[in-house]
Image (cartoon, rainbow, N blue to C red; front, side, top):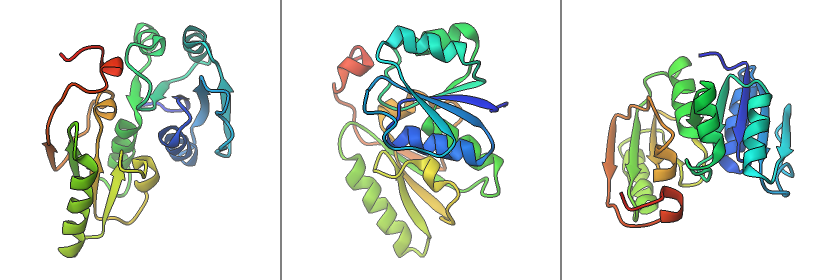
Length: 198
């Protein structure tokens, strides 16, 4: 998959992690965010554009000529950038999908991911899983929604990842294939993002 020019949508931890991983691998990255506070945390070599209007942001993403769009978890699937990228035939991934693909293309391909999702209890369970793995002698690292963006960890020497994944992150994964995964529970939460219980 060509990743010469990538648009990163959302300039939080996940967006900055994705941008840094892409720049390190030779991609040209343009970042977009709707918040006027975006861009205060810089990643060398990344242009950050603040575009408050969601429709205008989607237009600018298309006009930038990106080969790939990487969205941060907070960007809901009903925002215009999703439909516009789909209509234009531009692949749209989340930061987790990007991390998986970068790992599997690199020298650490095959490193296991053990994934934890669910409405409640993810962080506690992921932390416990990391502790169990280290007690068993693994060089384990807790990543994902627990605090460390996984794109920041893929070049680490960790032998296994305990990965906390939110439903937001899972919505934009396509090829992720963990060694094992668990869904702890499902409750009617974040309906503004999901749109409905269904």
